[in-house]
Length: 160
Image (cartoon, rainbow, N blue to C red; front, side, top):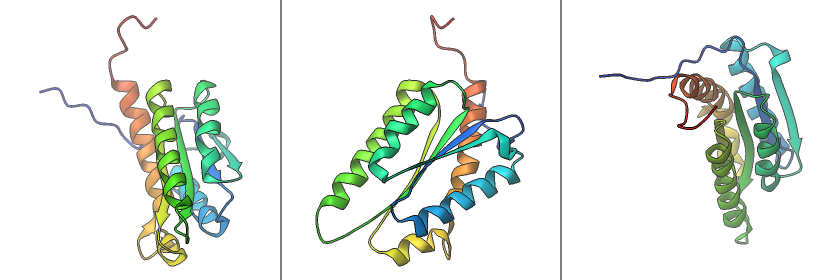
């Protein structure tokens, strides 16, 4: 059996992080976690690009531009959408997830989705360095693993 598995070795990998400024108390901690995770796995700061966007809804647009640039092995998309009194939460969370997923599928660049969708601020903070760890750190490992795995996969038929 031929088993393909990515590794989290970061040396030489170029990674972009797209982060939402909305709920920055949470997202700044996710960014710190992602940067820490990338560094831990050997990615040097010069190979990390951070793009701040106004809100989670804008993440897919910027992620697409970065993925299409050909400069990055993987993208990490970070944000926090916290439930409010209206259905706005559901609309934003679903569209951002769909958009980030589409970027990865259409460009072939791994796009790690770590936009927290929580009922309240306490739940978000618990996942941004609190009792549930830091999802940004976890996203860094996933991004490197996927970048490695994608490099080990056969090329697409007809691709030059």
